[in-house]
Image (cartoon, rainbow, N blue to C red; front, side):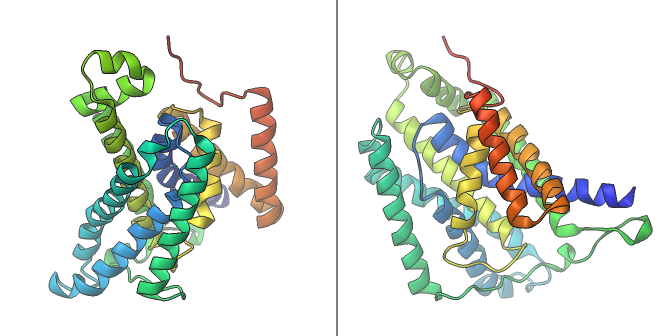
Length: 298
């Protein structure tokens, strides 16, 4: 029973990681149809922001173990990645709307530039980010099973992000304008919504969420310039499986892929398990091309 609970927790934890990474991509790709290959580098920017805050701010706010610096790193990562996304949208993306191949190539090139910038600033080797003392250890269960605090915190962070995004989309004027533009851009423009401004804000929001994902990933291992590249394919798979433009679908898809990946890796190997997940997703999309939850528009 404890083993089943541990595997279910690991699957939920993996799904939470995928969801946190994919949530930002759901805005740029799922809602705006922008194939943003630089999304992984926004994750990297958030991770390195956390590293810098840990190095320079932690000594001023009680030290590394107190952990206040990590709570400050979360909004800092969001802001840094969000500003990078805003600059990218204003300087390049807005001139490439409706040209998916050009967008793909341009953002891929920007991603390479950002990776090289990270190598120049922090070196090519991975660096380790310290953890607050309150994230050490875990919840002890009977039978010697332990649920790490880091992964429990990650799940709680994902839930907080989902609530914040839902509140923004459904309880704020900016969220209503965003949904109006994504569902019917011409009609929204006729009603006075500044679509270009909404595009920039939406892209920046997606990049900011990627920054929070990067901050969270620093607690799961070392970080490097290619940190985001390891997750970008999985993130696209989650958004496509969930259904383009459907954030609830993204949530369901991330959890399904996380649990399926954990179970298949348990019964086979890590590489074979991931390959089987890819095969199952492709087979499902052949049967249901619109994904788990399709967006209905008039």
